Image 1 (cartoon, rainbow, N blue to C red):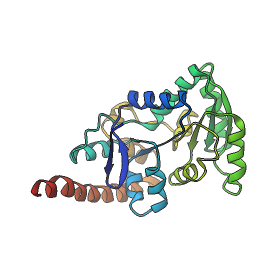
Image 2 (cartoon, one colour):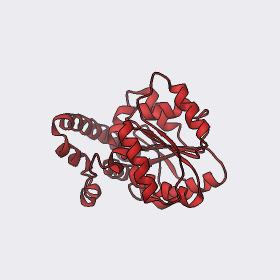
Image 3 (cartoon, one colour):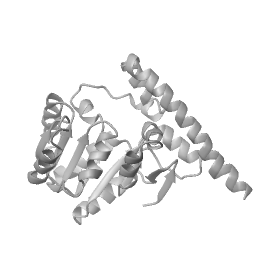
Image 4 (cartoon, one colour):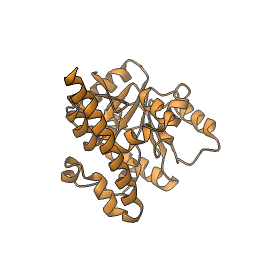
Amino acid sequence: MKEVNFIGAKAHLMSSIETVEVIRSRLDRGIFTQHSVVNVAKIVNMQNDVALADSVNSCHIVNIDGMGVVWGARLCGHDVPERVAGVDLFHELLKSAAKSHFPVFLLGATDEVVSKTAATLAGLYPGLKIAGFHHGYFWDDEEAIVKKIADSGARLLFVAITSPKKENFINKWKDQLGVDFVMGVGGTFDVVAGKVKRAPVWMQNAGLEWFYRVLQEPGRMWKRYAVTNSKYLLLLAKEFWKVRVVKQRV
C-alpha cells in the first residue's frame, strides 16, 4: 500500500478492488484493521481537531472518498487511481462477508433506520450473518455497547455515526471491540434504509455529491459546504505551493 500525506491526512493510493483485496487478506489472517476515509470536510476539520486527526492517522487503511480530495491530491503530484466511496466499499465488504460467513455488527443511526438496514442487507446478501445491531445514541454507556459488540462474535463492525464521533469512538475502543475489521460509514445506513437518496452517478463522478445534499437540505447544508469548501481551497493552495512550487525551486 503506497501511503502519502495530503494536507496533514494519511491516505493510501489504492483502487476499490485493491482495497477489498487487502482487507480480505487481513481478515483471512486475523489481522485487525482500522479503516477510515478522508473527504474535503474531514481534512478541513482535522486541521483544528487533534483528536480527529489522531483517530484518522492511526488507521491501518485510509481511502480517499471525495472527488475534491482526489483532484486536489493529483494536482499536488500524488498518483491517486480513483475515488473509493465508503458506501460502495461497505457493500463490497458485505458481499465478501456473506460468502466467507463472517458475522457483521451494525452500529449507528436511529432504532428504526438500523433495524431496516439490517433487514434490507439480509435480503440483499443471502447468507450474510448479522451478529447484532444497535442505534447510535449510546453515549451515556459506551462500555456496555463495546461489550455487546465484543460478545456478539462479529468479525466486521460498521459504524454509521457522524464525524468526528465515529472516528474517535473507534480509535478509543479498538482494542476492546473484539472484531477484526472496523470502518466508519457515516450516513450509509440512511441510504440503505431509503431515508436519504444518493446522488446520481454522474454527479458522484463530477464531484457534485455535496451539491446534491444542498439541494436536498438547502437550509441546513448550504452554509456548511460554502465555509468548508472555501477553507479547503485555501489549504489546497498552500499545499500546492509547498509541494509543487517551493520544491521545484530547491
